[in-house]
Image 1: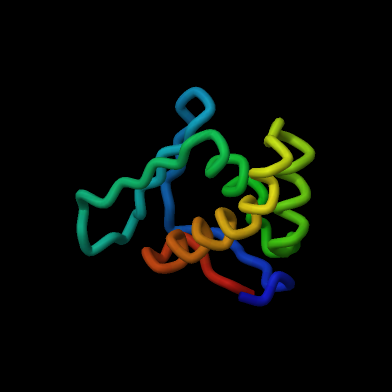
Image 2 (image 1 turned 30 degrees about the vertical axis):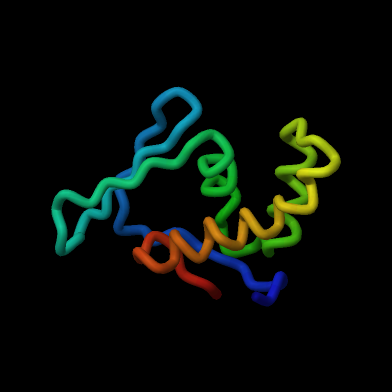
Length: 96
């Protein structure tokens, strides 16, 4: 995946913050039972999706924000890419 790709949120989404997590409900979902929950790290990424930040910038922000063991830091980029792929596959985000 190109690390220079930027993503934006689907605006047809109801978003609720519960503690450090975010719950997402698509407004025009064909499946009206579709509800998505993002944990603290996922919510942090979600809040950075503004159509301006690329993947590398998001990864750098995560590394600055969270205390991650040095041996696990190499996995952060792959984890972000997997999350973005998942969000895009269900229509919650789109690439610019």
